[in-house]
Amino acid sequence: MTKNHMKTHCSISDSICLPDSKLPRIVIIGGGFGGLALVEKLKNKDVQVVLLDKNNFHQFQPLFYQVATSALEPDSIAFPFRKQISGYKNVSFRLANVEEIQPSSNTLITDKGSLTYDSLVLATGTETNFFGLENVERNCLGMKDIRDSLNIRHMMLQNLEQATITCNNEDRDALTNFVIVGGGPAGVEMAGSLAEFCKYILPKDYPEYPASLMHIYLVEASNELLGTMSKNASLKTLKYLKKLGVKVLLNESVIDYNGKVVQTKSGNTLLARNLIWTAGVKGHFPRGIDKEHITNGNRLKTDAYLKVEGYNNIYAIGDIASLISKDTPKGHPQVAQVAIQQGKHLAMTLMNLINKKPLTPFKYKDKGSLATVGKRRAVADLGNFKFAGYLAWLLWSIVHLMSISGFRNKLMVGFNWAVSYFTYEKSNRLIIRNFKPNSSYINKKTIKNEKQWR
Image (cartoon, rainbow, N blue to C red; front, top):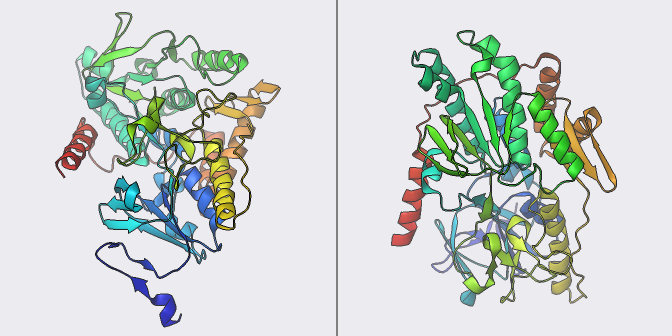
């Protein structure tokens, strides 16, 4: 490698060091599905690409629930960014948390220093939306990060262990009961996986008490599950869950939770030490965007070319982008396929802008939706084809396995699934660290307060 290739530029105004380059600099915040799709399409092009993320790895969100229920280990669905971009000559990764955007000077302020850009792409995704229910947020767990999944796993295992040494029947019931809030794909898949854990793992690991002691509740505010999918998918899913023993509560919502008792809008109370929240998300991005350009769900308004309204060189893709049109009055669905297609399209748009070529508006091509409800049970909506059962489950398995980053990860997940298929056995159910209730809530509040004082 020559000295010129090793040369980097550092100054007070640009304290994050990068390779020297006279090419246009495209900074991407977020290495989710959209961000990585964009990076992939821009590799080895005549642009300098900088990927920023608070983690040094990509995480495969659709399988978080399997990590939470000990079906997979976390390293099998996480893939290092540096390994992902190895060989991409024009792409640099920097581990940093972006705190503020300063559009007037094309500058980003991070916890590691500042950085300038020619074009900025926000692909930061979403965070759990508790809709202002502070007690619920304090005492339950969301599932938007691989750390959340591990927290759920440790919470579940610790509570099950505690139940074996608890003589008080009410306390034991609370420790072995699970409430999942939200009947979308994440909630449905979590409920199905927990139900199988209860049926096949609990009797072997915890002979001290019957599996019937563990109750699983799925609470959904609307009158159907999987609201973004077909009626057929919703009804089949409800049937599958009931067959697995899950108590599904439709037209019901949680209004309070003190860590042991769940209170619902209709006045019901559920005893549970385990509350998992999958009921909603909201956009998450650095401060600096004018509020007038933010719409419902804390999403950013974009035009047909994915440019954020009111800015000339700031773009948004994936879950935080809201492209409102006649065909999409509420924006596109917040799913991986949208993010991937937007990432690929934006790469073409940015290169066409640089090369002064005409632009084409983004058009989403819906490839269908899939959701699984335990082993051999899934639902699929593929255009006019709507089916359920083993074939849908097989398709779900293939699609997800092929979508995981890295050959080693594909191999690990495939092997675990094969073992589970024949034996119902899951990964080692180890309590590696002590999970402390409220710890994630306290950490989030501390970070938020620190940012406000800066």
